[in-house]
Length: 149
Ligand SMILES: [Cu+2]
Image (cartoon, rainbow, N blue to C red; front, side, top):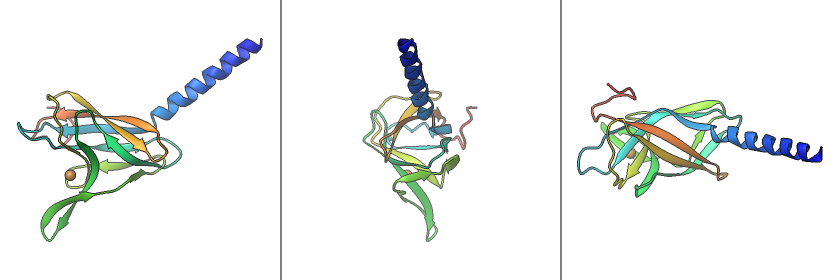
């Protein structure tokens, strides 16, 4: 009898942590295939928080990449410029749109082979050290959105 209660508690704990993993996601994530010799990537999509509290991403990482950060593109004196957006907070039950000429996840010194249709997986670590895997589909360089032709 005691043993049955213990197993029940264990199942409860396991299912509780499983639902926390899906709180932060990149919906319709997409990234343009870089031309030969180019090692930077810009990742777009809807960064969605399905949880009941805001999530602030402190660090980003991607295998085979030198550096991953969030940039904000802005018009400055008629020229488009990018600068670091700092820690990014996604509101509870809300989302941030990452798109060309706006917020994007910038990847530097990326040196893995990728092809159109592949998915790349970015890790986002929150200020409270929760880790989430975000996926983005590789699309042709002339794509203006996440849909493959
Ligand atoms: Cu950038």
